[in-house]
Length: 423
Image (cartoon, rainbow, N blue to C red; front, top):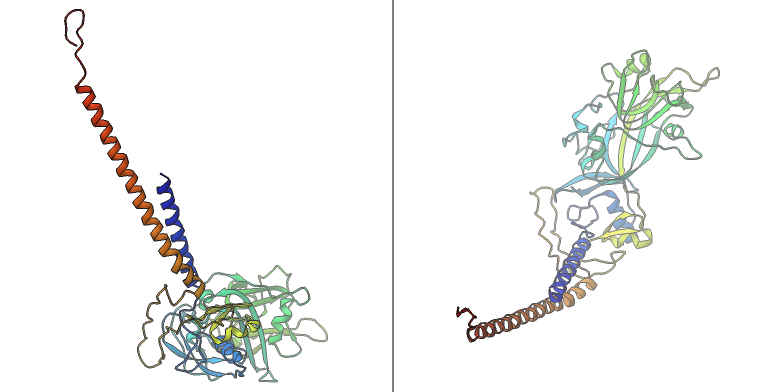
């Protein structure tokens, strides 16, 4: 009984140890980080930024090579100098990215080989680049002065890609307000000087809904947006101004909607300039070009940017390449097992399976396994052998005792009863 219990405990211990090894294995990257070339692509622009910073090289904005998160296929992507990855580009007077456009919801691409600022586009990064924030850049084309660019950053919980949110119709609110700055003021950073939003409603979020002004009594939606009106802070029934990307109200010409109904249009800016007689004047259309970047704004500078051998997946947290364990991926334990090189012109290269007993196990764990598993197996065998011997001895003793009892029964004398009946 004690042997059986010991065997069960030992088996549970070995299974637990193997589970720990598998869990540790998941902390390593499936593919390496690279410097953004065809032979050394990376998952995000931010990864390339860290690779450059780890060796004290500058990172310049431009086109780099990234790989998708589902296969070794690669694609060209535009990277900002802070590591942001361009995912979408939209024009204000266009219905291509209306709220119900299929481009939000499927895997199709649009002008993904062009990085011309005047060309609307949907890039592979929309479905491949993980992010914990997005940056909205708005280059104003009307009214004058033109070519002024405003920017706004929206922090998120970490998501695998922007499509994770925008391919649904679920309202996901966010609040850019701080104790000192209202979110309305942050959205106003996208506007020309002397322009401001109305003070009412101020609803913001992904897949955001509001009421349309002009007496139309209908709901309007936007994939990303901020709505405002002249009503109370909680009344969004009649919105006249705001910044919206991907509006659902696209049945009329954008300029007509802006001037007549004060409505919203795709990637358009509707604002009410201050005047000498009234805080809020009639809303006017502000046209421009919107560029949306996906970012992973984590800081691993204290870990030398993971030494260019891992991804910074949280502040001061690296997920290292296979063969480079350590807090900062600083230990070189085994050669890399990744397939190289990558190619943009050939079929995807299958990634070979990684041996969990070698590639993804750090030296300390490997040493422990080398001792614990053989010793455990030997103890288990000894325990089973000992138990088998005990069982054999018990069976032999029981057999002999039974034979003696039978023999004693056979040799017992007959007893005669007083009635001469043999018992």
